[in-house]
Image 1 (cartoon, rainbow, N blue to C red):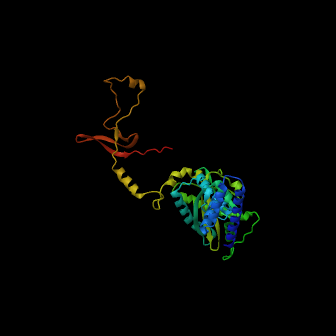
Image 2 (cartoon, rainbow, N blue to C red):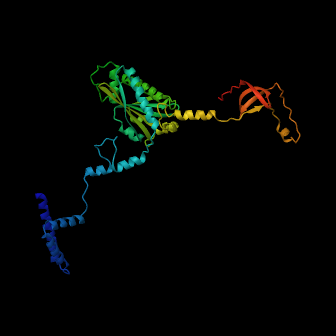
Image 3 (cartoon, helix red, strand yellow):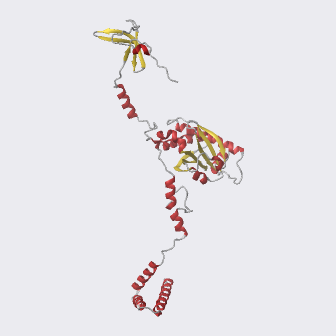
Length: 381
C-alpha cells in the first residue's frame, strides 16, 4: 500500500509539472482552464484520484500479458500432458485437422481383445497378468510417432485381408518386465532397466514371441465381425523406420496397460483409418448384446415374413432352341412340336432356378404335378 501511494504521489507531481509547463506556453487560455480543472479534481479526495487514474490508464495502452498467459492462450503449455485436452489456438488447430469418427463396434473389439489377452498372456508368462484399456484416441500418425517415448520397440504388422498395415508399440518398462518374467526373475522385485544400449537378440526374440500372441488375439477379436489375419512383418527400434502411413493421416490408437504383480508396462496399438476402411460399415453399427451387431428380434421377424412370402413357380414341359430366322418367320397358325409325352418329367422352376422335378397328372378338374425329386443347384465358383 505504501508503494502504491508513493507511485500515485509521483504520478501526480509529474502530471502537475506537465500541466504547469503547458500553462506557461502562450495560448488562448484553454491551458489555464484545464489546469484549474485538474487542481480541483486532485483536491477532491480519493474519488477524484480514482477517476484520474482511470482516465490516465485508459489513455495508455492495455496491460501487457506475461509469458505464461501467452503460452496458455496459444495452447503451448509445457506442463500439460500431450494426451490431455489442449486449449487456445492449438486446440482449434488440432480439432480442425483430426476428424474423429466414432466407431462403436471398434470399442467392443478392443474390450474383447483385453479379455483374451489377459488369458493368453497369463498362459504365456505363467504369471498373474492383468490387462486394461486406458483410452482410445484419434490423432495424426506423425504426431503419434513424435510422442513415442524412446527406447521402445515398434512392431509393424499387416492385415492380409485388408491389404494394409498397423503398428504395435511396446515401451521399455514392458520389454524388461517380459524379459525378466520369461527368464525366471524373482517376484516382488522390479525389473532392472539398463538404458543407453541397444536391445539384445534375446530381448528382441522374447518380445517378438509376445507380439505374435497379441496379434493372434487381435485376429480372434475381429473374427466375429470380419475374419482377418494379422501377420507380423518386422520389428523396429527407430520410429522413422516404422512409417506405415503419411504423417497427416488420422489413426486410432488404443493404449493398453499390462500389469504382472509389481511389474508391467504399456502396449499401444495403432490402426490407421485407411486400414479400417474395408470394415468401416461394420464398425459403424451399434452393438446389440454379445452377437456383435446381430439382433435376434429382427432375425425372427424376417424369418416369419419369409415363411409367409408367396413365390411363383413355373412348370416347364419341354424346352427347345430355335434359330433366330425360324422365330422371325413364325406366323399365325405355325405349330411347334414338343418332345413331351404323358410320361415325360416336368421341371418346376422359380424364375431361372430349377427347384423340383416330377410327373404331370390330373386331380379332379385340375392339372397336378407329383414332386418326387429335388434338384441340387451347382454353386458358382
